[in-house]
Length: 300
Image (tube, rainbow, N blue to C red; front, side, top):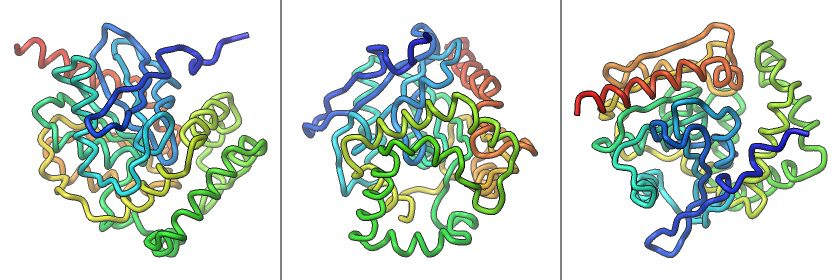
């Protein structure tokens, strides 16, 4: 029987923070490779970084406050995240590193690239959420949900409900039968949902939610708040991957990033959806991150 990638001790580490909190993280991939921080989706956990361990990269998945092993900070702001990551980078003796933001992790990766730009050698944004004013962030039924999430009791209630569903025995079956917002396609996403990857994703989501729903509630609030910077102010080398068949996060958000971040390299595969773009593009994503780290090393 194959051992779960989540069983290793490297999947359950913590870093103390100056204010007494702790930050949970997991390490996967190549210990001698280029260091890259991985910021998980919504919901999610540090374990996402271990689903597709890459060669040539030391991938470090981090739990946001209130998820997994990270202490909750209910009134945290997007602007607080770079400070936590700087402490973790120092804890790991990393002078320079790359960052990956997947889906709900993209705003956090962008914030780190902006706030710690002198230490970040590359930014990868994958099927990412963007600032709240971008067309597509508040589309269709999400408009009503966004209005409800501005109200603290409603936000906490919905976060608690999501937690109960994910921790239930029916979670995997529910995720496999859940239809996309408009239709059951793209085919690439549906194939993944029927395979073993979905089971591992549910395990990762459960890890993020098993101690509380405060991480989800804080994220839900933050996604609707104005950013403290403009994406155009990001100066680090950036790559963008977003499937045109994405039924969860519209591709025009990826196009927004591509237009705003000077010199960004963009990839918009026609047939990929929200989940399949991660799997199908992982090789090119890691190659991009490794190339930027090597270029910097050679320049030095």
